[in-house]
Amino acid sequence: MSNHSVEILLVEDNPNDVELTLHALKKNNISNRVHVARDGAEALDFLFGTGSSPVHNVDNVPKIILLDLKLPKVDGLEVLKRVKGDPHTRLIPIVMLTSSREERDVITSYNLGVNSYIVKPVDFQQFTEVVRELGLYWLLLNQPPQV
Image (cartoon, rainbow, N blue to C red; front, side, top):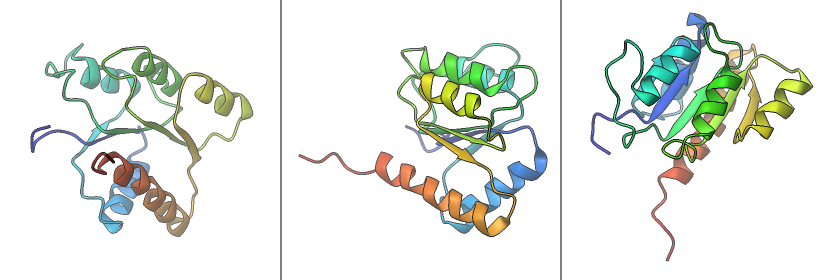
């Protein structure tokens, strides 16, 4: 990947949650390049080079996607389904980062191939801890291969 590549795709429509997530990432020294998509359609445009966004190289995909469930235009489950259904993007780890505690959302997310389902805490301290744990994904993705 080039130095200008996106390493985290954050798909979140709530501006407060975007700021909270970015702040928590920074606080935990996860200094990855983050691209924010404000709805599911924008996320799909970014990943697959469709719609009004600049054409995106499918070989230069993010290393992890933090995906909200309840999104305008295209919901998180549809984004998850499209990403996991495409051979160029299916191996990207996806963490559903949502306020939904509904059992059917959890079950559907895992059935569609989500790697982790995390319910967003309201408290900043808890949220920061959740993001720190997400950093473990980052560490695992950047480990040199074991021989």
